[in-house]
Length: 461
Image (cartoon, rainbow, N blue to C red; front, side, top):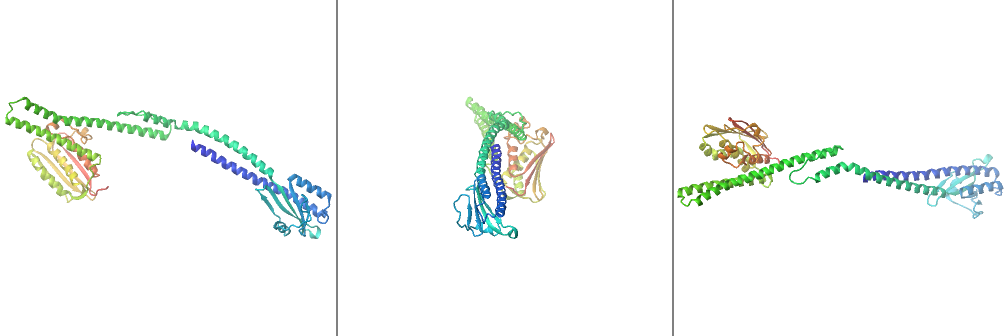
């Protein structure tokens, strides 16, 4: 609406100003031409009648009176001696006048001057001789006439212009008010749809296709609503999973402690066995809480990455040495191979966590007997590549997109038997993303899985 008002009013004001100024210039120019013609006519008559020598010619006097009456002006006739022989106002006759304009006119340069402040036109015209003296200026007519009627017309036009401008402003304001209301109606519809969305479950709006912009906004809003709903569903599921995972060890400890309390004849060996089970459940609860805190810190960027130049080969050897006893206990062959020396800018703690989780999963979910886990480390000019393959139970293809979710388990009964918190792969993926890397999985049920990790050798902030 404001733009419409500015676009409508500013050009109108400019047009009005230009028209008034142009009118004044043209009116003054036209009046000057007419008066100049009259002066030339009178000059010729004055020269023919010999008025400079005998200023008592009644015919000439009548014409001078008529000219001053028509144009509301004053006529002064000066002879060659700069003596005023005629003043239509009867004020300065017999006096002498020496002014630059008169002198210029005697020199052959006739002048015209317009005074807009005092509203008059003043001009000089030369009275030439006759016969052999036709080119010689014998006298000068100094004529001034009022332009008040031009100013009056200009004032009238200005008032009319202001009236028209006022009407235009009113029409523009009214038109702008209704048009702007019509134009923003689709945006009000979007605003209303956004404002009506409350609670955890948001509702998508109907597409508003009135303008390209409203269509884009409504599509973007619906996309955002879909993402928020997915996030809310994920949050609810996460809360439910956390509650379940934290309650399970507590429930086990409650059962074990009740068993001790309800059986006063519990032997020392039984008591020790119960306490070992309770200690195991406490360790499980602590592991869940620790992994949860690690994951939350990573996702909220509280736990920033501490990058140092690291010998990845040595880091992998350390992890393999640490996990070798676990693999031997599970009767799983653990083999690591480095194809070349690899040095990268990484966070050693988080990268050790990635290697440990992937290799431990390969050991846990392997065959009961005769299984294997192979770890390969390689690099090129830009990236390091870590591959962890196993001969385990495998992962269904439809579960590829979910295994990195918190608490997701492909086979819940099998996973509960094996143990773990269900957060290892979620933490692993988050740590890899913090390094600017990627992880992907390929697997076949019953034949094993392969996790492939790619990390930039140079960390980019």
